[in-house]
Image (cartoon, rainbow, N blue to C red; front, side, top):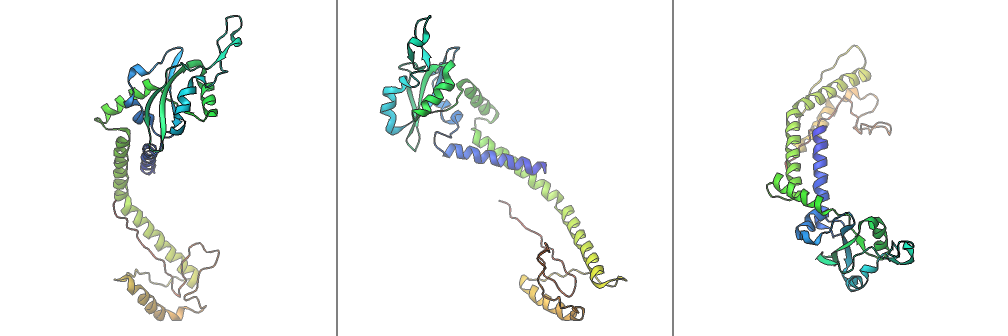
Length: 272
């Protein structure tokens, strides 16, 4: 179970990273998309300032460049010390907008610098103005990218995730191969017990029956085998059970015969 859970988690991580890579800038992993394109001089991360990424539709870029420094114009008080609210303005630093990249869906990504204290309020104001602010920490992202490069011999996060998923898959397959025989033997034993119990319930005591396995050489011979068994044990079909369908309350979904019969069909899965 642990091996299966580990493989599923790795597989889901790969799928999530693939969606991020194939998706637009609203869902893309900024560690991979944005960090490599940024010059450290473009980032202002201090006690008072913070540089953030903001997404703009291509059709609205001109309007954005003309008005971005006015977004959230009522958030900050710039008045004198004795009356800060006398003059209200935006937390955006004028002239700080830098266009970094654009995706296939005509979404452009800009960097702008704002007063750190008003980050959450600015996100709401930007959304009202139909612009999307993405959460992003350049320093943490840069460290993550460098760490992945060192740990993964220069490969990216998706490649590392695929390698981990393949490793988890191999461990799961190895475990299954090592335990398949035991599981199949236990399954066959359960079937044998069912044959015994059903035979006693159907034909009564004392026990007087012979258990055997029948394996048609070809799938097409299965019907012929059933027909011959039906003729051989027709005398046991005193209640007309031959060929009857199971009751609605029977969850086994197995056809009834004049003799006790349970089917074992091993499943084979090709490695992919």
